[in-house]
Image 1 (spheres, helix red, strand yellow):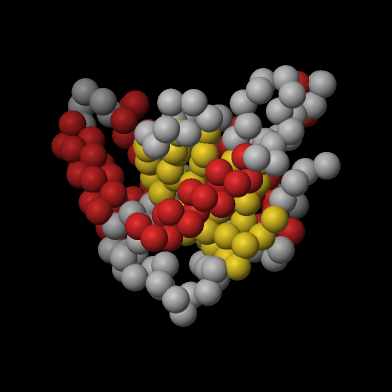
Image 2: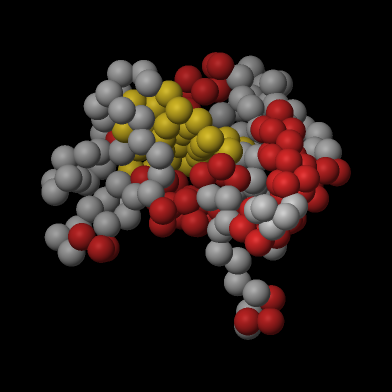
Length: 209
């Protein structure tokens, strides 16, 4: 059984979005569309030597996007960290002995948590990040409804999401959404979704049912 809970955070107290940049520039939006269509990867590969100008434009664009990344207040970060750490205590990890927790912040101010749930058939194991996403979707959330994700990992190293989790996260979080990973001893790393998975798989419209 997957242990999932939802925690409600009132937006009236310590507004979690007080330090968040709401606006997005037209350039950042265009760059995100380029990235989703694979054009960023196209320029970096096909025109690496002939078109250094466009490579520079794209690099500057990514830097600008990082300025508009969705940030959160310190108090809210602490709340998310404690939620993720608490969720790790419910992890079912008898094989790896590596309990992970995740806390996902929705636009509504709700926090959805998840933990890793392992299986004797290792391929059936579900990670904490995906568990949090699935919990949120079951509660009615969808793509674009999320602000940020905080991951808690044991030990002194903060670990990024695995490849499968990155693809699932890219389906629901925007390119500028920030993913944090915090170790048991406080080491913190963070990335935007664009940095975690710069060229995610997108099903072409013509192949959709």
